[in-house]
Image 1 (cartoon, rainbow, N blue to C red):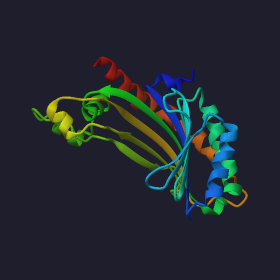
Image 2 (cartoon, one colour; image 1 turned 120 degrees about the horizontal axis):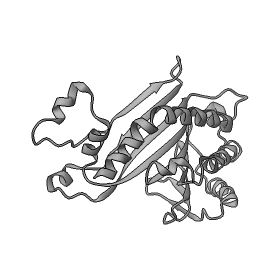
Image 3 (cartoon, rainbow, N blue to C red; image 1 turned 45 degrees about the horizontal axis):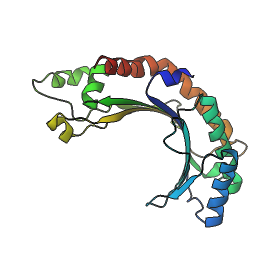
Image 4 (tube, helix red, strand yellow; image 1 turned 180 degrees about the vertical axis):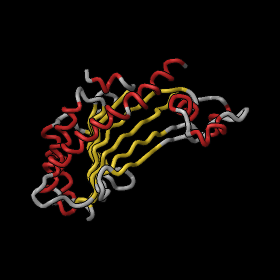
Length: 247
């Protein structure tokens, strides 16, 4: 068991490849691409088209660990939820990036952005926004607002995006997503929902002609794991888990 699985109820790693030009939608091309993926992962047998036209191939979602892949107009998404290790998920992402140049005609020049994202979901029945404020605190400038008698947080989703290089092409983003609404707070009735933490490292712009998508994703993964362990695990994930355990 990888230690990421001990930090939250669920964790997942995603790869997103955003393109400048629209991706192919021809029936034969799409089916060949998903068919080649299924050849490596036979349990990915659920293929469908969303109402917005996105194509999706996935494993059964009732499995604790499952994979999915989507093809959108200008984005390819690969995800593995609760993988045994991040290495197992990375093998899937690498396969997709090996396939897209010759099956979907995506070249390094066509890259608008490449993401490596690690997400964590916490199950919690209660006011997510109040929980985040309690676990992580708020900026001193607005701290007194939280202390207003009778006030309750309705929307508190801290996020920050950082440039990691002078040219701003390499960026990191930490985002917390809550799922509590005013109706639930008003009634004091909260379903068990997922509170999510997303940490993404993104490379913007076309890659060098001799570069490969897999190599670039490898660099993003190394940077992501380095920053996550230094600045997110102890500072964000563990405080959230500890606060939930006290409720």
